[in-house]
View 1: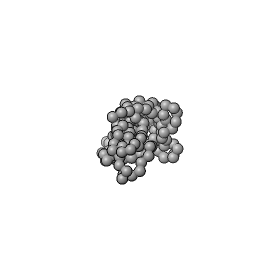
View 2: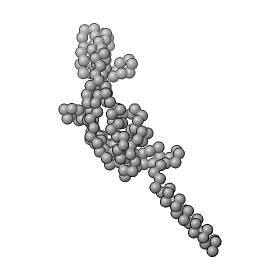
View 3: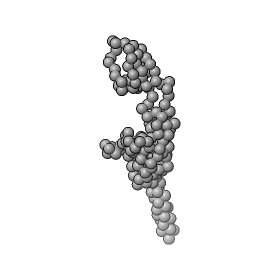
View 4: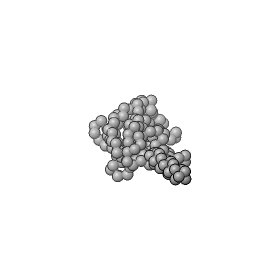
Length: 177
């Protein structure tokens, strides 16, 4: 009788242990878990797959993962995307969508007139024309605004500086380290 009672207690303990561990969404150290059915809420450190469409105030599309049907992947909170995009996805779950307008301060910043510079330009340098994209010796990209005799005017502001950006975002998957 004691043997039967002991076996029953052990069986119940095994069932309880199995039930407790099957509902655990957290990964063991060194493992990752993926969510494609909406269990996780996005938090810093999560690897996301999203679809998005980015538009300007005039409604024109400036970028879209949907056009190429290739999801965009990034890790939340690591500076891989503009701050406003990180903020927009936090707290969402797989399948959630959000349309958010991100102001310049949380996107590419305000336009800075100090980044419009006139630099010497000699005839022995490569030909440049208004609208050309060039890279400064600091590695920063710039656009040629004007070519004068002996100088060139460059704008090193990001092309979206000073603009609000609207994103239609859909969370496709969340992978948690």
